[in-house]
Amino acid sequence: MRDQPHTSESSPKSSPKRWLWLVSLALVVILIDQLTKAYVVAHLDYRDSWVPIKAIESIFRFTHVHNTGAAFGIFPDGGSVFLIIAAFVSVIILIYYHQIPDGAWLARIALGLQLGGALGNVVDRVRVGYVVDFFDVSIWPVFNVADSCIVIGVALLMLEMLREEWQMKQAAKHAEQHDTASERADHEGVYS
Image (tube, rainbow, N blue to C red; front, side, top):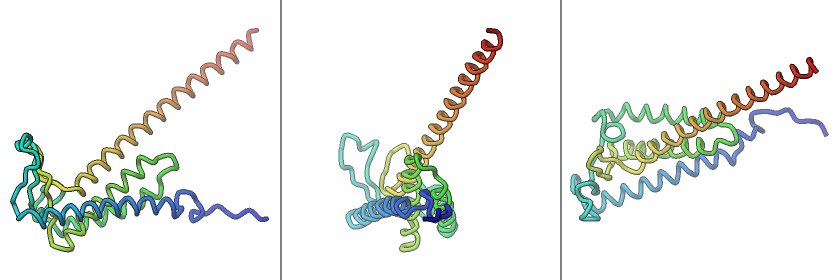
C-alpha cells in the first residue's frame, strides 16, 4: 500500500469532529441565549425589572432593555457597524480555530463560547435591530447570555495563553538544566 501524502484535509486539526465540536458549542450558546431572551421579552415589558430574590435586589435583578451598541451597552446606536465587526470576528475565530494544536481544549471551548456569543447577538440585530439584555448587576451595564459567553471565552483564552507560556518557560528551564548537566558531565569526562 502506498503512503498517502499528508494534506491539511487529512490533518487532525481540520477533522470534521473538531469542527463539529465548535459548531455544537456555538449552537448551544445561541440556543440558550435566544431562549432566555425570548423568555424575558415574553414576561417583562421593556424597561421593567423583576427581582427573583428580595435580599439581593440592590445587587441583582432582571431588567428588559434594548441595546443598539456593543456588549454591555457601550457605543450605542452602532448596530450596523457591530454586525460587520461580529462577522469579521467570526471569520477570525474560524481561522484561529483551525490552527489550534491538539491539546489546547481550553482554547477550543473559549472560541466556541465566543463564536456562539457573537452570533447570538447577531441574530437579535438581524431579527429586531437591537440586542435584548436582561442581567442587571448594579455595578455593571445590563448584559445577556451571549455577552457572558464572549467574556468567559476571552477569559478562558487568556488562561490558555498563560498556561502555554508557563509550559514553555518550564520546558526552557528543563532544557537549560539538562544542558548544564550534560556540559558538566562532558567537562568531568575530559578531566577524569
